[in-house]
Image (cartoon, rainbow over all chains, first blue to last red; front, top):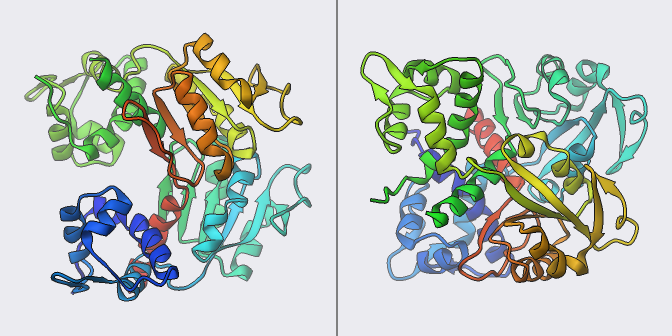
Length: 209
Length: 209
């Protein structure tokens, strides 16, 4: 049976993963929903509700089995094995993403970096030589990469996407401000930096009322 | 009466704002929930539910009044006037954020940029001279800035936060991987880049089952 997990719960899974990873590496074996709640600033009621989707890890009056719950959350999030990703575009944003430690920590390994700018091709970034974007279709299948990050200007994003899809990429995290057209089997996550700013501005506006 | 708007609806407000802004600038005066749904890839039922929180903008069989709805969403999101923000940290991420057009488009103006690195102080980025971080407490109140983006290393983030709060900042968007301690009147949005990657990985894992 495949359980349909609500989207807000899915959005909280990374928080659980991070918290459980820390607890496990500190040798903690059991944690209560109240303790998790304090660590994550989520109500213990919500935590019990979320974790109920993943099976029977709680023991009343005792708490959750940390290693078992961590293994389950890792499996659900697909981080129980390493995944290869490619990065296209090494402007400031691309370089910031390339240097982000969190990817490696969760088993996401950048296996190739591409750019169309002749001044950037050949540079070494996080141990990878930047390769010309026109070689995406040729190189991505050799790498066996499944995921891609697009950090190119809007006008170049669809062309890059087409090459990535042709090269076998199945999941794309798009930072270019343009909606990408992809086949059904490819998942796209559209990043929109303004959302964070607007969420903060919303809270300011509420207080001004 | 203050209506409590659910968080998922708030998270969708930036999408409505963007879409309504485009429609308004194209001269569209009325839009149906079905049309909005197609543009945003959200069901029309969800759209009617979301928009019902903001008042009576729909006319059955006709649609929503685009200018009125846009004005209301802008007001709720606090983008009906411009807001000053400061940026601390001009590594790759800070520079990517400084160059992001979406902020200006929504009335968020970077009024000061700070860094602690002597090699960066004095540089000009998006027309602003980078100032030394130790002058935050002095300069931020002069600017009348309300919002701040923190893009500094984890070890420096709390010290920067304390200076920003002392300088009158009321909302912080934090990209440093550390939980900030702030007084109750200050809102913090913690950015965690891994969340986007994990959401994609989740979808890959679901398909592999």
